[in-house]
Length: 155
Image: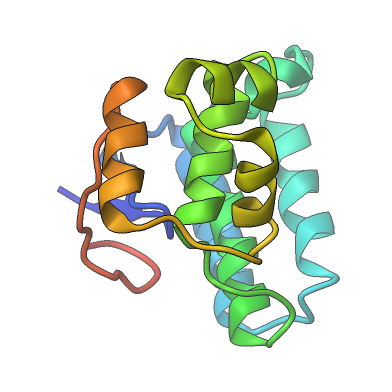
């Protein structure tokens, strides 16, 4: 089984991609391997995605594995070239909030933390202790997990 693991630990089985999506992966990965300028990379992979999903509702495309893989490759390239950084727990927490709650206010109310404190954490001005993070995640049915750092490609 050929798997692709994103920086966030999401795993996609490349063997399960459609034929067209496998072709997009091969082309985009090959371009990635050539170490193109990070600002050029999104245009290439997004053009490939547009071709592969012609006629489909764009709002559904972002949930497709091939889209997430290409987006991850873009992030990795940006990290390698010094334009961006690897995600940390705050990025993952912000993702949980945006996917499962109407607002940060609603999230804070549900888990019992101050909205200003959350803003400071997400702005990288403060940290949550591991105990507090676990307490918050328990309240929203998530948990802390350790994932192996993975290189790009199949694992």
